[in-house]
Amino acid sequence: MKKKLFKQKRRLFISIAASMLVLSIIVYAVFAVTTYYSELDLLTSNSASSFHQATINMQNYDNGNWGNYLLNRKYDKTYKEIYDDYDADEQIKIIDNETGAIICQTGNAISVAFQGDLVNEDDKTSEDEDSIVIIENDYITGFGCIEFERFKKSMTDAQYIEITEYLTKKNAGNGEYYELLCTEYYIDKSYLQPKSVEIVQTCDGNDWYVQDKVIKHYELKPSLEDTNSELYQCSEMHRNVIDDDFVFGKYKASTALDEYYDYVKEKYYTDENGIDILKDGAEYTYELNMYGGYEIQTSVSVAPFTYIYSNWESMSVKPYNSDDYISFSCNYARKFNVLESCSDKLIFMLVFILSVFIITGVIIGAVTWRTLKKQIEQENRLRTVTNAMAHELKTPLFIISGYSENLEENINTDKRTHYCEVINEQTRSMNILVSKMLDYSKLDSASFNLNIQKFSLTQLTKKILESYMIYDIKLESDGDVNIKADKKLMKSVIENLVDNAVKYTTDINDISVKITNKSFSISNPCEELTKEEIKDMWQPYHRKAEHNKIEGHGLGLAMVKNILDLHKFKSGAKYMEDKITFYFDY
Image (cartoon, rainbow, N blue to C red; front, top):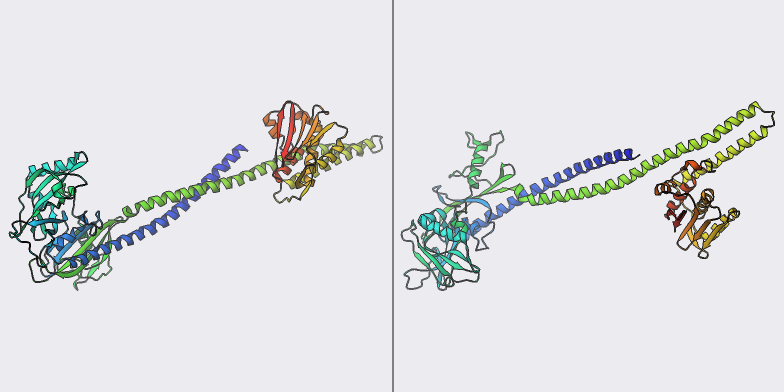
């Protein structure tokens, strides 16, 4: 039986595990696909919003620095209102619509808003609307960007190495650290060109330049495009910090727009009518603008899970030191990896789904296994009962057969009466056995219904013991104990327990019954029993070999166990001090 149970358990486990795995894969696949395309739509929407916000901001800034200031907005860690996505892989090119020349584009640069005073400026003057600077109170705010290559070329190798050593060390002790400040700078068209920088020792509490301790001053030699560029000097009240990552050259330019153009050129060709057609035969109508950019708004897949969003818009602004507006186009592209963006969601959901299905699988497996185990046990019990029943019926049938033959052969002999008595006795025995088997079968059925009623267990026991008055059975009861149960079945329980005690006791005068408000028990002396033997006593047709001569069929205790289980009464047997005690709690 154990071997069969193990095989059934293994088979059940494999089938449930396989089913749960397949179901988990299907559910996760549906979720992953839905999440993936939702994330793609979200990233595309965010890219479109970023592009349109950039063009709006460009049109709002009509001074000469509008291009690089906004193109490099993602590098600005200080001004949160324009710092939208620091890690965005985006590229923007501003193209003159008349000449096709690139006016400016994203690159290895940092946008800044330095504050300072004009050098050698005696009187504070108000700049016109075309100026690159804005005068506020006693200082001037200059917007623009510092390009890494120009910045590095403006200093010697020794200066650059020394500056980076300070910034690499960073910690100056006592809660202070090193920073690079720009103290003098030119506003050269749309670029800010530092003329002098300083390594200062500062702390988080310092808000003004005058609070910092100057460690080293460096004079730079910037190459100016506009020889008339004005020089500005940092005031004592302000700190023009140059970001460490920029100094280390970590602000890398994106190539998303160039990659997008290359991808589109590979996918399309232009026919004799000037219409661009997909190389796989599908027609797609759009036009190249004069500088080689594709006037389309779309997201294309350039690699597994990697997309590039592209868009463009034409606009006009008034550049620095000019009364005329120029027409230009803003070409934008942003590259993103959908899988990287939604990987946290996918991993979380994978763990969640697996956890749910594992727990569900364990619960289903446990319930199913319990049911299956019960069915197997019932099948084995039925097989055991059938075999035992056949064995029990075989003996009386054999006797009946033998005596009937003797009766037939010796019909006129004086033994005829004896033969008939034996046949009748065996027939009655078989009838009793069949009756008990039917009762046991009914009790083992799941459809059996109890007739619950309240009655006196004490009175029922006394009435049963009257049939055993020839034996000195002692009864001890806590008054008149009433219980709720099936009276007919409880009568069968007590009769079988008393009958068992009388049959198997080693001292007929030492049988005792005890009834309390919580339990019923009956004890009798017997031979020494092991725990395994006590456990086997509840099995149907189980009898020790030495008890075969004692009248009985081995169904009594099995019926007792089934009846008590139907009532959900806790029952058991224990061997102590040379006595066996059967009990049940109600």
